[in-house]
Length: 248
Image (cartoon, rainbow, N blue to C red; front, side, top):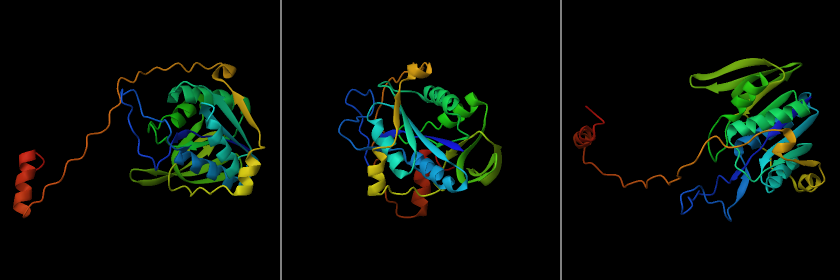
């Protein structure tokens, strides 16, 4: 069984984002980048499924040449080979889903596991769009995954708690935080990852149009939080809330 795991290179979650002076986007110059945390969980889950019938894990990334570093991290964690679809253009979720659909057609994986969202834009769209393009079953926000023959059972997080779904393969799964805790890549595995196959492609190789459909008008930082106000007692608190229109 082959598993495809898309991974994205994003601003490290420990770094505070800064908006460019001209308001065109987030400043990524000379800042630490890393694999999207939800994608790390997806890679970890694919590796754990190797004990249950998975024979090959293929990591995929879409973006600039530096995305090779993210793919090498996935290879060091335990992925078998990687594919980089190199482009200097920003690719929107629909474009990513179309590229992944083309890669799925070429690779024929039985399972696609990806993070539920990327922490840089928080769109939470790619997995659902890919499932729609493939016409395959999907289970989003997975907190438990169990493979059994030609199906997969997924426990997923919902507003009211959790629900369990059984999907026929091929299927799409997006990962949530409770699914697992990703491992650290050991030094020997980091060295081995340097020799694992990493194919480089372009969107044109797959015949996919990634032209943007959206235009970013302006990016601004959120307003700074103002200082709080101390109140002497409950009556004063209620009076202030009424003045603000919060309480009646």
